[in-house]
Image (cartoon, rainbow, N blue to C red; front, side, top):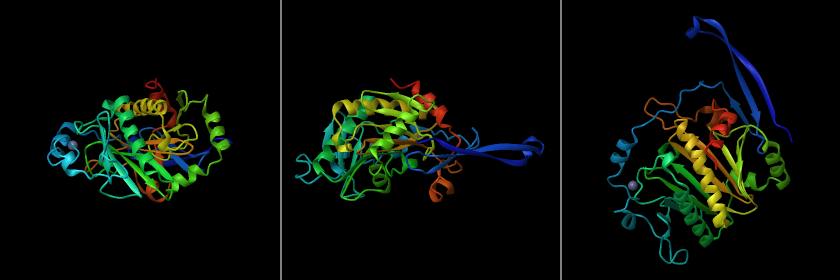
Length: 318
Ligand SMILES: [Zn+2]
């Protein structure tokens, strides 16, 4: 296995520099695991994410929110007794219930807390995350389907239709494209990839059983990957939950520092693999982080260099 990349230069007469000849580099990198390519642009090529007045957004979305304290019991669905005798699953402050939209055989939504309608990225704590993940694990164990996953779509830019922050679980008899691809990876290939990156600029850190890397050829802006043991998302023990929660918190704090307020993650397995990407909070004239390249050419184009991202997350990883 080797890390493959190719660089080329473009040339324009730049109106910002009195039409002087200006060359910029483009680097195409191949992901050693998926063989998908990514396009790295010089830093500052695309505008930074737009920051929002979150207090105002929270206040405007709070009335009528079905996930808040006074509504959650009345307005969220319950599971049949065979899945959950209580109808909903509670861990710490987290509350989990069925998703009204069935994306899989079984689909769940779990709020970090009915009291946390507003939860910026740098205020998500390891405890909030570990409890929320633990509720998802209990759900995935009760439904016992072949392809379990825990997913995040934090805020509307990431695909959430409800502002109140939450995770989503899916348990399906059929894999998604990514689940199929990752499950088919030979274990030796995954080990080789981690070994190749272990001492490099993209390595973030390693706990007892989970290793964290910035993706060499990111599938989206700021992609971070965590690799755990040969278990599914339904088989996380307390130790793994703790490791995942503290690593995710480190990544989210780096995203927040870079100006991102939204993210997606997917936790799948075996082998246990967590992939996170930052999402830009677009405004009416703000730029989405997804354009033709990501959506239709299956190739991320990003000016957030993985080595810079790894250094930022590493500083927050404990
Ligand atoms: Zn709410």
